[in-house]
Amino acid sequence: MTQPDPEASSASKAEPETAEVEDVEVLKQALAEETARAEANLAGWQRAQADFINYKQRSEQEKEESVNFANSLLMLNLLPILDDLERAFASIPTRLAKLSWVDGVKLIERKLRATLKAQGLSPIKALGEPFDPNLHEATRQDKGKEGMVIGEVQKGYKFRDRVIRPSKVVVGNGEEETEIYEGDA
Image (cartoon, rainbow, N blue to C red; front, side):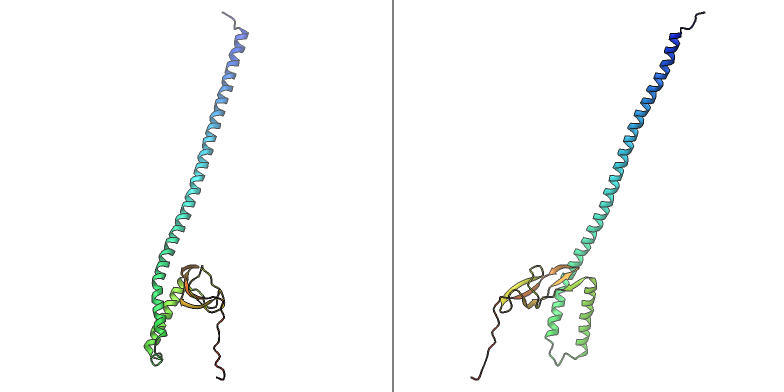
């Protein structure tokens, strides 16, 4: 029988230790790669989730804007009816003004205005205000305080703080109105 070589046995012991160390290193590297892949997947998922939340918010905002646009078009189409009612009430002869059917039509007009106001329609105040091109459309100038609205040709309206029809106004040109004095002539 041959005797085992002491150097060979120490070499065979070193090989398993080296193999184990290499296996551990390979496993550590594989673990690092998988950890990096998992972190990348997590980051991608988080981005996708944030994109989805942003998409939902954008689509809700676009939906709301579409509804507001449709409502503002409806309001704009109803404004000539309000104008017609105002002109009709202004031209009612005084002998007919106290009739019950006139009061009934006035009540209908008030209900219509209240309903439109509840939906967000509001008139633009013009008379006596400084001319604002964002709210008013000048139709002409006349004698009066410069830059002030001295007359209203057509009422303007806002729908939810957005001008849907500017007021058509007469603006003062700075000339003072002269009073006609008919003295003792």
